[in-house]
Image (cartoon, rainbow, N blue to C red; front, side, top):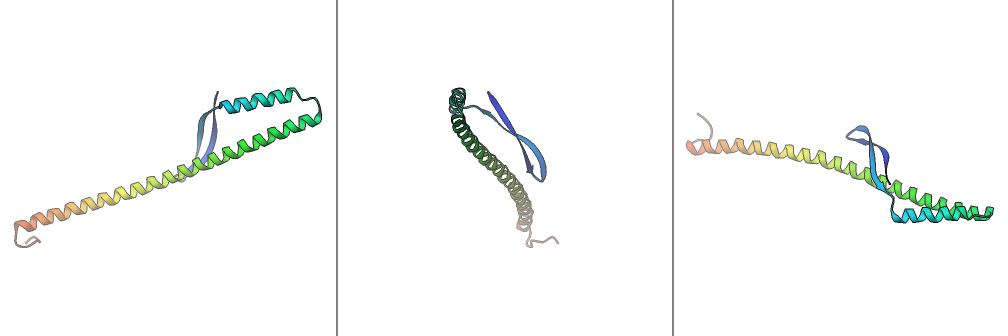
Length: 121
């Protein structure tokens, strides 16, 4: 079974809602669910139920921490990509300007080879 998480983020100054995923349940997660279901069904008294509930709470907490860490990593990666995109656009603009300047000087150089003076008379 696949599932996704909605994530709200700011990308290029705009708020966006994106989906993280799809994720699939791992065999480890399925095993954990099966073991915990069985433990809940076999509970006979309050103390046993507390122990199972405590285990479930710790597992949920660990999963939630991992999910938050993964979401933070994803957001940081998206922000880094946005910075890289703007840096690449700036570099492209600089290269374009450098190419235009080079062509200008190349034309002047060709004119200078034809006559004695580099400037037009």
